[in-house]
Image 1 (cartoon, rainbow over the protein chains, first blue to last red):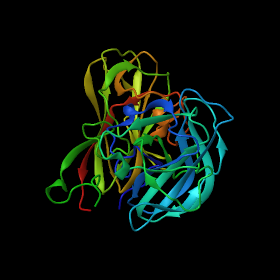
Image 2 (image 1 turned 90 degrees about the vertical axis):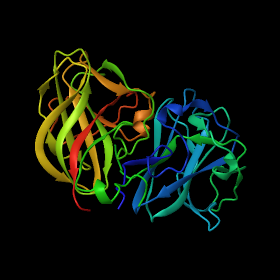
Image 3 (image 1 turned 180 degrees about the vertical axis):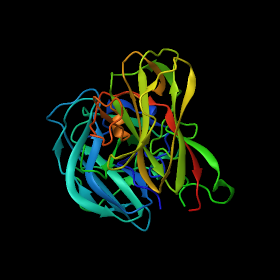
Image 4 (image 1 turned 30 degrees about the vertical axis):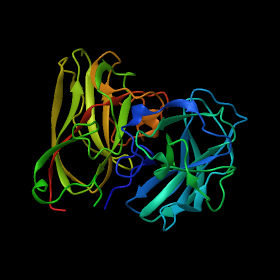
Length: 174
Length: 180
């Protein structure tokens, strides 16, 4: 059985399905499009409990920026489907910090899931990287007008191919 | 079996080194890239805890940390379970002031499968070690925890987050795998 790490995200070895080379590829950058959700694939190999969701703020933040993060189950077509858990619209916090949001403890069974992140404005900077493989839309999906995150995703192939540094924690603290 | 799990067959019951970085890092929960370089320990008496996934039963024989050429103080390297109980450690050890992989022979300790923490602490902020330097707050996003006033490494960790941390020490363990 695959051991469960305390922090699971787009850089977690053995869990992330995002083809990135490592942590240093992430840098602060603008969000791709206001109110657009981006869905990034995650393979959960072991049963685990989601206790917090998190994203990583970039160098410029504003408390008037709102973000939402969530986890979606996958459809049989391997696309984002039903929302499993989300933070709800949340004001952006401190620059260059991991921002945690407590959520209802939620058990994930092994399988394919999608981490979704959305922001109210493009000015919200986040730590992100771009996929180096094509077609990017086969790996990352997006949905417009998706803040707060909808209960069921209506994804389209992403035009951006961006991966954001975000995920969930299996621990309640720190 | 996921790609990060230990291979079966001849891999079993063999000696291996497992670490936090690219070389031997297949059990690390972090995708750490970039070359490690030499630098001073960030804060005196601070412990840095890095997560490592151990997919099978194994016996920890030794612990290691990559030390640099400057050393006047002491370091400690240890292994903790997920809840923060120290399983084994080197104890306070004089920094060798040598560019090398410094190995500490520890009590043979059976662990796994599970998630553990590899901890390193140093008594000052001038002794040098090899570490990678992903920009803050990358270490926090990778699950790295810290503790102040943690030299020598405590029996029970009091974990905290240092969002400004930008140091991932090169360290790990030598082990013998058991039948899974």
